Length: 378
Image: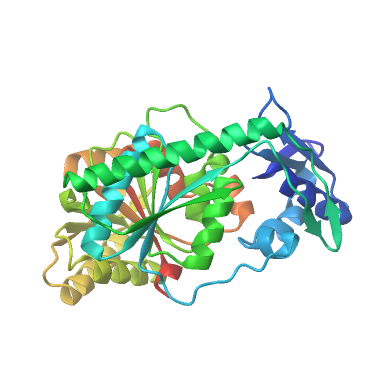
């Protein structure tokens, strides 16, 4: 059991080598497993694997969201003091990316935000990075192949921009100011880095639908952004019928009666209620019946109804051993358009062994998920 290997993190090849050396200095054996078995140098990322017995010690080093930039590479990532009135939209040039863009443009128009479209890529060429005064020279891929890869990426970006501009000209999309940026690296790391530096008001990104093939929770870009990010997120499943947030009529806000739930809810209402009209159901999930929870829900409902008398607010308790199945039924029976809940910081250890309701929901439901990050309102 002690020799069982577990994946600590997924990184680009060069950064994985840096982390490997860093952990080995602490006496931790590290194994690098490539995700691209047909081409072991060119990869969409490599897994840094360690022995299970070393996990607690390794997590103390890596659980900070900023460890990669500040602790290892030595790059101080500046943190914006104020939000940037911006929506960040990660794109992969798929047909579905355009659907996510459409939702983002309509929201940006209503909220008077600008949009940044970000694509994160990897090429077959690796560069040298400093590490505590040393330099590591990493294997170089085929330079011609790298140029072809980059040319393809730029072509796809131009096609996306052309598509968006045509839709704006045809009045199918609102005329919102937007920019496009390209980043090289692992998607979740670059998105987190950008959101920390720029503090956009919202990240809108796609997720797979409930009928897609299951994937590793820890390997999901959306799950990582939700758990480690500082910004609120709207996760859009690929099978959702939602095209514009104005079509949202009923939101279910999941609460555990904790203080940050109330703060995040209050911040959300202040930001969105003047632009959209919707009703809200305060929802608590529980495995066994607890009358006290219903009393607390009623009290919260009365509080918010007094604070926001123009909003129709209800409360409900979902009870069942299979909470996700029961939640699915509640969503269907009550016409829920969006599920909203708060994203509370949890370290990597707890995420690895006890996935949150948010992580499970993004892989389970075709209903869009709104993660309200309390830090984004600070």
